[in-house]
Structure formats: structure tokens, C-alpha cells
Picture 1 (cartoon, rainbow, N blue to C red):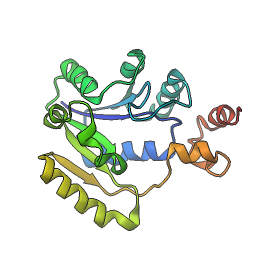
Picture 2 (cartoon, helix red, strand yellow):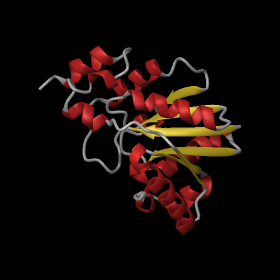
Picture 3 (cartoon, rainbow, N blue to C red):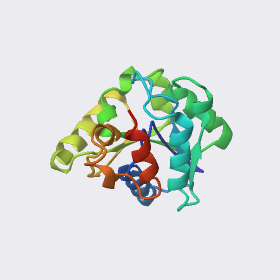
Amino acid sequence: MNLAIFGGSFDPPHKAHLQIMNVVLQNFRIDKLLVLVAYQNPFKSHIRIEPHKRLEWMQKLVQYDSRIECSDYEIIQDKPTPSIQSVQYFSAIYHPNIIYFIIGMDNLMGLPQWNRFDELRQLVNFVVVGRNAIAQCIQKQTCIEFAKKYNLTLHYLDFCHTISSSMIVNDSKKYASEIPDQIRQEVLKILDLP
């Protein structure tokens, strides 16, 4: 079995999250893609939207593909959870041949600061998703050099969608169309609260 883990705050979810999953499923042989909704990102000081609400939204959004499943594992920890802990947990459950761990290009350089990075890099194949079409050649080369330096199994996926959850939160009216239709009104209602 090949397992992919796509962790994140999804605070709030947006169309690029769905597109990333589709690109990964198209480019790798994956039996199960776990969307791991974080209670809170260990590198961020707060959450904007309650974790169970974010999980509910992601569950609505991934119903189109039976290979995708949402997990509340990190939410029920009731605290920020290191990725290594989640990877070990799901590895013990599924006994996968390969674990693909999906991250954005913006997280790549910070990987060595992640909790127990040396263990994590031995357990997973990192799938790095590019963010900017203009800089894709530079991003790909950066990934190659980073993988060599840290002895990682790393795959780079060309991807161009510059939206982020923070952009939506900062200007929900401008970026409303980036929120999937199924959850848009509910997300906007929550974000517009003082």
C-alpha cells in the first residue's frame, strides 16, 4: 500500500488544497491520501477557525474521491502535534510500502527545524508542491540541492496557485472565489465576524 499524508491547518480550506490533492493523485500511485487537519500548526501562535469546523469542511470537500480520507488524529491530541508523531501513528495502522508526505515549497527550508527531522526524513518521501510559476525552475533546483544536502527522498511537483489561507482571511471579499462553493458561505460568515 502507498499512503500519502497531506497535513495542514486548512484555516480555511481553499481551492488550491483540492488541486494539490488532485495533482498528487495524478502523479503518484496512491492507495490512500490522508488529509490530516492540524489542531494547530506548531509554528503558528494561534488558530483562526475551530479545528472541528475545519475538519468538517475538509470532509465535505473530499467526498469526490474514495481514496481521500480526512483524519482528526491531530485534533484529538488537543495540542500542536509534531509530524513525526502522526507519521509513526499512521505507519503503524496501515503498514505502507511508501509514505508520501506533501508539503508546500514555503515549508521546505524549515524542515530541519521540525521535531525529530532525522527520523521523519527516513520514513517519508517528501512531495514538495511549487507555489509560483515564475520561479519554478529556481524552486525545482532548490529542492534538488536541499534533498542532496539532507539526504532526502524528495519529489518536486510543478504547481501554480499562489492563494493561501492567510490571504483569504486578510481579504475575504477579494478572494472569496478561492473558497470552494460547498463551504464558501459558511467560511465567509465566520471570517466576517469581528
